[in-house]
Length: 492
Image (cartoon, rainbow, N blue to C red; front, side, top):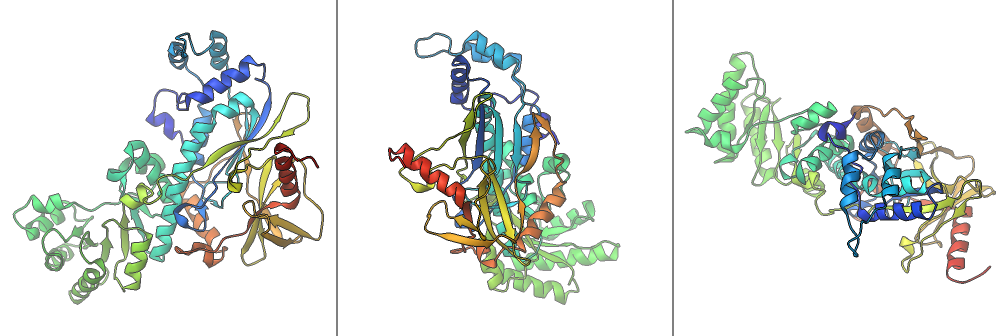
């Protein structure tokens, strides 16, 4: 899709943290440039205190990796950087190495729109230690934010119970980049359209919009404003009725609606943007129905999120279309996903793999070694658990798979070995060449909705959701425990 190339004419290889490049030079100076490594990108806790997340950002990741290279002006800039002794920070030989560096890693990832859970790798990177290291920051940047937005959109769409959701967040988004990425991820998560016209152009997703209060205020009366809009845009008439008196505004919209009908057009609906949305929507519905406009929809906006929508539904609100802006495009109430990128394996050319592990005083932050894959089990009616296993060592024998909770090894789940399953990580790049053709955005959006039918309803609760079983395969758990004990000085 080449989103990044269309937005930025310059390369983006310097969109990284400085320490990625200083570490890369260190590997180069020590002769480790050919050392192979495996990294995994994952998150540790579900966002929004929820029970799941929706993986998003892979389209941007593929675009980024297909354009990965260091340009002459990138290297010229790096040559100007100095250390604390005021000498050049980067060796000319290393800069020459970067100039000749071509992306050649193997990448596996979960397809965009996949329902995912803590500790599961969303992306696996295998390649030279230098290449894999410098990808850390951009991959996290692209995946963290979009996964947050897609998840928020999914929750909001769940709250509406199938009513259309319009993403209206561009004006409140974190810059133009954030607004565009939010529109993309929100559509994948389930939104039906966006107000962001650039997103419509680039991604081919539907765009929708009405008019603002300023249109009404620019005329001498509300009725005159609605009439003028109907004359100018007879095929886009959703009238914003709350500039002065909301219910009077509905009655004036009805007047213009009759005028439209007489000329072969229709009033599509009205929009409420303030006040008691439950009460006003109920009363507005009565006015519209009594006037013969039963097919006119009521659109609502005004700082909505999944919790407010859920409450409005409980109150019997007659809202048919939901415009959600700020709290969707900014992932309101959780500003970051907290995704991480951890080294799990290394080897020198011709040698055996070495398992790597990071320790912590917090069990949740102890990393998992291995070349990881995620296997999702199905009992014929619903998904029953996910198993993270090491492809290098294979699977431990027995009559059942044993899933061990990474955060609490006393919590375990047995899964019959004859259970249906599918492995979530699929090949995206092989030796730097893209081998995966992504679905179109509408297909990804459908994929999100279809998966959710097969998860227990408890994981979709907004308050104290059920914890879906995700665990390390028993053999991988045993290996991890052994490595932790060794690192802490306990020999088996």
